[in-house]
Image (cartoon, rainbow, N blue to C red; front, side, top):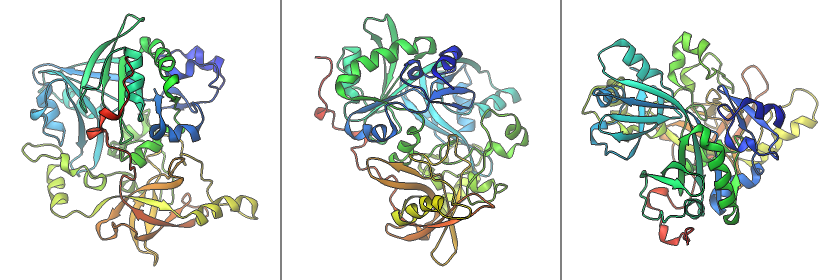
Length: 442
């Protein structure tokens, strides 16, 4: 697909950075077209450590839930306690089925006493609940742009764009601001997926290209890097954010109709058998989200999560791949016979890749977990998989094996070392010392 055909699609279906004439490679994902490469994947993978990136790939549908029963609806669905939620703050909402398997998770904003807003999640659970009756809730749907910024200069970039001091904005805080020279109001939120300093700008999708262009112009002097979808999943694995479509699948795939009709494809790959759907799902405990579960209200999966909290079986860790085994995978391309499965970098699987799961084994062959699609960091120079791993194997330095390959094809046993999750060692967004960040508005 070339730039001309992409631009014919329109901004409603293609992300803002795809308007640039020098971006020529795009990817189709869940009904939208997004830039695949920005300023080059190696440079992009270092950006949130050195300067800052801008990414718009999660722009799309926004759902606003309003009405006298909106809070009760979320409470009846989510593992979280939504009654301690302050207006103007964000919350990561997690919804499970009765077996305690994650159906969806997403960031929600509380705009008023009875108004909640979300993007980049799966809306099926709350639509099903509303359609079943008993809730006075209205759902408004619109398309929005979401410009994500992350890295040590991200605050400086945004202050340069918005011409205002933003050093006092707390983690998960939001603020409505004017974009100078555009006559556009944008929402700023201090949130991100890298594990370090990060922000988002949000607004009506038709205003996205203008805001993006202004941000790029303001940010280039501060090292702003355009990021595409090829590199974006890397920050989830190294930054500590398990994600449906990136590292595991939604358990909504247990519904045959959803599997067949959803824009989100059920796309099993890896050494785990394609019909083993459970290996492709996660419980909150398996992604270290049990702390979010508050057992002061009823919600789907409460009994399962209480049992998991009392006797956890698996947790999440990082698996760092051995270089010699990586070299063997590529070497097989120049040898006779079937090569090992090719390992693309930086992201080994085209998104959505939650259906990719590989067996994790002890060195004597005992199965101890499932590994998500591996990703390569050009900052750490490592290839890493997220892993749902048996508790007794989850210790730093443990040596295990990932069985790499697609079921029914040639397999490569890759030796890996268990490390902490997340691996990132940059300052955390929650308590980032903003006094070290240069002002951009002066």
